[in-house]
Amino acid sequence: MPTRLSLIIALLVGLVLGIYATIPPAPRGVDAPATTFSAARAMADIRIIAAKPHPTGSAENAAVRAYLQQRMAELGMEVLTDQAPLEARSLKRLNRWSGRLDTAMTLTNVIGILPGKDRSLPAVALMAHHDTVWGSPGAADDTTGVAASLEVVRAIKAAGQPERDLIVLLTDAEELGLDGAEHFFANNPLRNRIGAIINLEARGGGGRANMFQTSRGNGEAMRLYATHAEQPAASSLAAFIYSVLPNDTDLTPALKGSYTAYNLAFIGRSGLYHSPLSTPETLDQGSVQDIGNQTLELTRALLPRDGMPGKAPDTVFFDWLGVITLHYPAGLGWLILGIAVAAFGWSLRRDGSAGVAGGVGRFLGLALVAGLLTYGINWLSLGGSEGEYYDRLAAIPRLEAMAALAGIAAFLLVIGPWRATTGAIAGFAAPLILLAVYGQAVAPTAIYFVSVPLLLVALALAMPNGPARSLAGIGAAIAVISYMVPLGHFVMQGVGPDMPMAAVLPFVLTVTAILPLWAPIGQRPARLGAGLAAGLAVAIALWVQFDAPAKTVAVYAVPRT
Image (cartoon, rainbow, N blue to C red):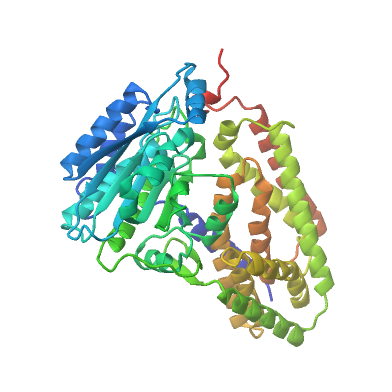
């Protein structure tokens, strides 16, 4: 029988674990062992490079390039530069930012090569961009990537000469249109010496560094990551979502080639994206440590003679709590779904199918009410307009609270007084099973976040009545909640300002997991609680709408006076 205590335990433990999964590691100091990554050592470079904005073509950018060449030489690297004319569309953007009417501009990539023992082997490349947008020091985007690459080279060299070359490619004009990367991967002969690429990026100023994109045929590449990333943050769901979004990084032109490739970035503290306040002082050093750790671990795994992974079919991969990376062949998703359906079927045969139709109706009602409430309250926060992009990024923490309260209101209205039988829970899960089947057919590497929770809930429901079933229900709920909390957080950071309704799917999956533990409450307290939650969500929406524009808004987004 469901009890309030079981639910409370599952919610508290799941929330604590989920929040833990969003926290970067503690930064290491300058006294860290020489062969490890130290955020404090990287920060020394970040403070110099991000002292001022340094967009392409500026005197500040020239000073940054000179500093980077000096640092590479100090690290014992062969130093090269690679120049090309800026594309017309990119020059137009730069002129719009600066207010000038330049007719030509030259970009300059900075390249360093740490020689390996066997220079005939395909090299490993670390890539970041050294330019910033107009008006932002770019401590995160992408000075962190630049400094992390240099610190990785220092740590690799401290362990002895690597087997193969390690190339650091610091591109120019990424913020204007990926021009530096486009030029390198189309023209520079060094591109033919590269076997693997790790690109480092940022959109914000903190949070976990996620491995959110890979090259095609990533089966072997992800086995390498799973084996060597000690505090992983990776998701084939994120990789799929990113593949269908109109977003690009310097890795985009590289993916036209046959390289093994990884893309890492952090997107927390989103209001600092392209912000004049993106300074070394506002940068989360834990995030620097996080992206540096993962990059060093991957680089160290790729550099040995037998380290370069081959191509294998794309795999399902995701980390749990930053502790372990789970990965398996995409086709295994059918077996997961089959077991989940069989477990639900066994439960229905044992307990009866009464309530299945009602469960389907409750699911549709919850999804509809949660979606409409989230959409309507978000529309209110926008005041009926589109909103200013960078101001909305700064509002993400409030938008997350707003969406969470809308979900609580919907839950209390639709689920609160409901007693869910085994049949009702199976019915509630039925639309999700259909979604998982469709997803397994069209996006098999992405749908695990639906099918795995369904499997856990179904197995818990199939346990015999008694303590074992109760413990299994608590365990399943904790596992699902602890995954959906960081997933919902990531979704809100990624698309929340425009589409907070995207968080409804993680929300209904969480509800599915807690239904076996849910003890109904009276209609009156359910309605009062829903009204209070909705009222608080509306209050936050009005706060967002009428609040003054954030000080973090990008300079070039502010109308000229």
